[in-house]
Image (cartoon, rainbow, N blue to C red):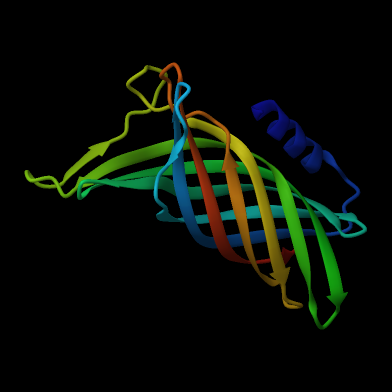
Length: 208
């Protein structure tokens, strides 16, 4: 998966036939969950945890409405569970590299356009915390240890993005999307933890 993203990004950067390139800074909110499956048991999904995303993309026009958009994003992701009045919130800070293929449909010069995007991403966790609230002894907050041991959390993630948005004639755009996490955050055999998210955001296309 990492090789696929790198190949797509390299091909996009190496391509010299783009009719237009824009730099797209954007920011927004995430609503993420952690899906857990242990052995043959049914999977369980945490409640939503609210986070944020901020990043920049390089939008390279391919013609006929198509474009490719690699980028670099900073994401706050996680999940929340509540059992017997005790709430556990997991928060993890990720750097993500998406490479999306998009299609833009222009209504008219004065009406803007709609766009759809999809593509793979890879991510790496920079830091994380577990916060437990509601214990009789008081709240607890622990740092997440990332690594390859059973007691550690796998820092690498990967998956696919799907976005739908609207762009104004002035270059401002809004979008919503879904990130399907396929990387396993658990190092324990027969345990699978995936992060999935809904996201909304706003951005601005800066023409070069």
